[in-house]
Image 1 (cartoon, rainbow, N blue to C red):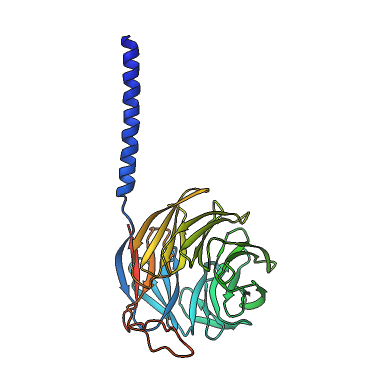
Image 2 (image 1 turned 90 degrees about the horizontal axis):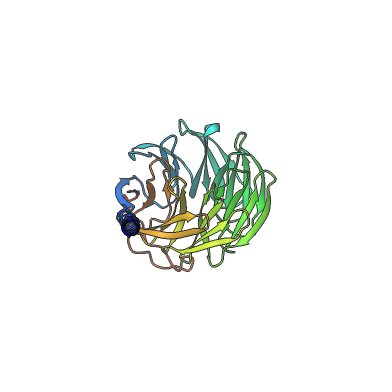
Length: 350
C-alpha cells in the first residue's frame, strides 16, 4: 500500500510539475516583449516614398524618397549619401558580388545603376516598358528584373553588362516579387489576385495560381527553407501558399492599407506593414500552421517595410499629413498633402 501511494504521489507531483511548467511557459510567452516604436530617424526633403531596402551585411538602409534614394546607416540612422535623380523612384535591388545597385525609376521608365561603395551613378538603362515599380536581383542568373505596372510585364537586365535581355508578359499588374534562391522568381499580380512563378533564365511564366480569399496582393515575402510564400492583400488578408504546389495553406487577418511584407527566418515571423498605423505579426508554428501573434503600433501612412535579419529590427517610413487638395477631373480623390520636413524612418524593436 505504501509503495502504491508513493507511486501515485509521484505521478501527481509529476503532473503538477508539468502543468506548472506549461502555465509558466504560457505566461512568459504572454509577457514577451512586442515590437514597439523605439526610434524615429528624420530624413530631410519633401515628397512621397515607396520601398526601403536593407543591406544587413554592409549595414545600410536604402530609402526611396521623392526624386532620390537616401542611404542611411542601418544601426544609427546616420545619413551616408543620396542617389539621384531617380524620377518616380520605387525600389532598389542590390548585387553585392558585382558591387552594383539598381533603382527603378517609374516616371521616365528607366533603371539607374550605381556603385555600392561610392554611391556614384554608373549609368542609366532605358526600358522598353512603362512605369517600372518593384525591382529584384536574381543571383543565380545575375539578372535584374523590373516589374512594370504600366506594361503588365517584367523586363530582364544582365546585371554585369547592363544590357536589356527581354520582357515577359505577366497577364496583369505586377507588384512585389521574391527569388527563392533556387532559380525561380515569384510575383504578386494585383489586378487578377494571383501569384505567378517565373523562370528567370528561360524568361518564361511557368505557373500562376489564385490567392483567394486574398484580393489585390501587394507585398510578398518568402520562407525559403519551408517553401512558403506570404502575400499581403488589400482586403486585410495575408495568404500563405506553398511555392511548389501553389496550394493556399492559410489566410490570416491583417491591418488595413498594407503594401509591404517581410519574413524573419531565424525567428519564424512574417510581417505586414499597414497604412492604418500597425504592423501585423504572424508566427510560423510549423510549415502547416500559422497564427497572428501581435498587432503593433507604428504611425499612419507607414505602409512599406524592411527587416534587419541580424537584429530583428523592423523599419518603415511615413510623414505627417495635411488636408487633401481640392478634387479635380484628373484626380477626383486626391491624397492628403505631405507636410514638408516631416519625412521619417520608424525603427521598431523588442
